[in-house]
Amino acid sequence: MTRLLVIGPPGAGKGTQAVRLAEAFGIPAISTGDIFRANVKNETELGLQVKAFIEAGKYVPDTLTNAIVADRLAEPDALNGFLLDGYPRTTDQVLELDRLLNAEGTSLDAVVQIVADTDEVVARLLKRAAEQGRADDTADVIRHRLDVYEEQTAPLIDLYDKRGVVVTVDGLGAVDQVTDRIVAALAERGLHAVGPTDAVAASA
Image (cartoon, rainbow, N blue to C red):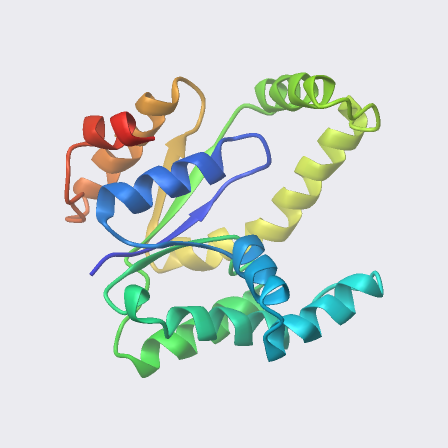
């Protein structure tokens, strides 16, 4: 019955930790990117709407994003808990998520904020860009992306911090170490993994 949200800047390993935490707590990892792609691939009614916006080079509006997330949260595997990755991104989306969860008599148990030293993240992303042959990912471009992330997420963190649900964890270090830090921080709040983190590491 654990409901989590994971937030972190590009290059901080958020996606990796989201998958590992979902396994540790026995809940589905729900990434907006993944469910967007699944809906588009399966040509659902919502997916066709998303495809139209993407092909037109436009942002998918909050109303459509909210509808897709609500549809995913209504699936059986998410009824007893979930981990959100990539949603909510705006205060309006936070309020919509509140409405959805309140209707079920629930709320988020914790918001895991993964933080990392900016210079380290830039170095990590520059290395990744070089390996993938993305010459346009310069240090300036990456720093701008990180600035945009901070600007967009600051209001969300502030809102959730006032509710006392934010757990801040250093995202630098070995993957296993970061997972252990997060699991330990959540345990201090009474949120316990269903299995040992070494089992999670072995299956990752």
